[in-house]
Image 1 (cartoon, one colour):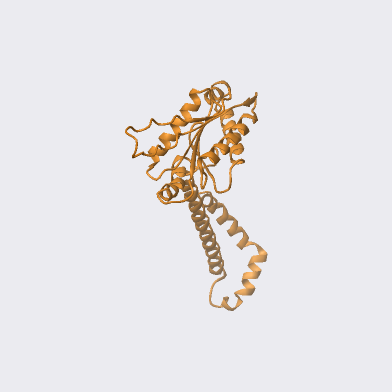
Image 2 (image 1 turned 135 degrees about the vertical axis):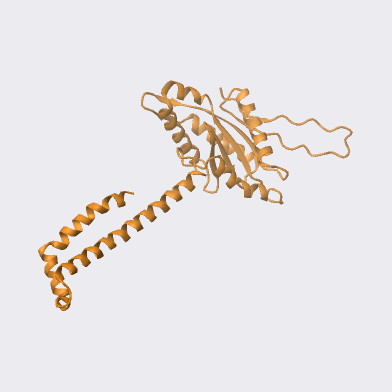
Length: 264
């Protein structure tokens, strides 16, 4: 659009340039062979038309490049969170889908962690959403610093994030989550009017062969809620699946979620 708005100005500039003495002399020298057949004014008009055509072609190219860039950015924002520059819920689900399919085959497990910042609403209420945004970006940077290149972090919404840890069993995922918990708790975020310290609660599970996205996140969220109920700022692992026992008359009761420490 800006290129189109500049066209009248460039046309005037082109006319001035073409009418200048050096250009006139150049035109006369180059087109001397045609001077006996075509009037000099016509030659000048042709030159101006050619100049304007070049401008139009350049403007069209600029507009097309700008449109392609805008389209690419719009497509990126459909799967990436604009604030934190990590995948949004849709983008995370897209990255998760292949690992859900792989879980139906024998192989190494894949873990999923749901992370929620404790009492984050107070930051927005007391300091405003601008400070809250600064805190979220700092927390994301801290968490990503604890992950491998193959791991995936996504923002589910608000102050809740999900982590995908390929080829990671439940005990190893708990260790990673605990390391992240400590990194978040030790991170002072410098805002405009204060230095803010936050903690995070996490629920950890692994993908099972029968899992759908709904069942997987339900199990991880239940572990997260257990962490919240037990005092926040801690990591809770979902209970391992109970295998059927053909020799038992009664099915054994489901095991409770496993808590890694209590940090109040």
